[in-house]
Image (cartoon, rainbow, N blue to C red; front, top):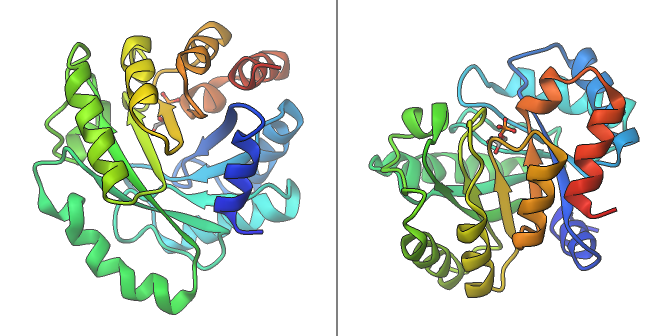
Length: 245
Ligand code: 1GP
């Protein structure tokens, strides 16, 4: 089964939860231990990525440890063209649709495509849209942020992404955002498209996760909360609320 098939199968039964681990922030061993805790909490797969300091070595170390220790699927969430490793199960082949820098829209992808092909990594095409506050990824990605009340604009981007034939659409408020993507935007985008909708950025409570799920998120991503939370019960509560369990 491909990772894309795994995702489609999971979301046919409800919302999925993905845990984001930044390979620049801890050793492979620690990432493996975190993934094991996330697996116990009910998470469905691990995204590996970060905006800075990510390279093939730390991705490989992280992915191998996660596979060996937790056995969860690993998916690269690229921060740039160096975010490639043959040791993962798949890679989100994504375009930051509202970047003002063509490198992030298509340039890095053109650079990376022959390397990915040679390594034989499964790619899942995804449109990525940065909503305010956008945080580091909005800054590094030179995004022209979509404002929180620009619902029609977010819908138009989502439709364009679907018409391009992408498999997933990601509404991103930015890692560590003080406010997640507004529920009105999630529900409007969900109504407009039929491809799976990912929502992330600033989700760190069961209430926020539940709100995103009820608004229509097919996949909920949490990163900062996982890095900071040492309480397994709280981890479980956020994952359960994401998945509606
Ligand atoms: C960032 O959407 C993800 O790309 C996760 O954000 O770190 O705020 O959970 P947080």
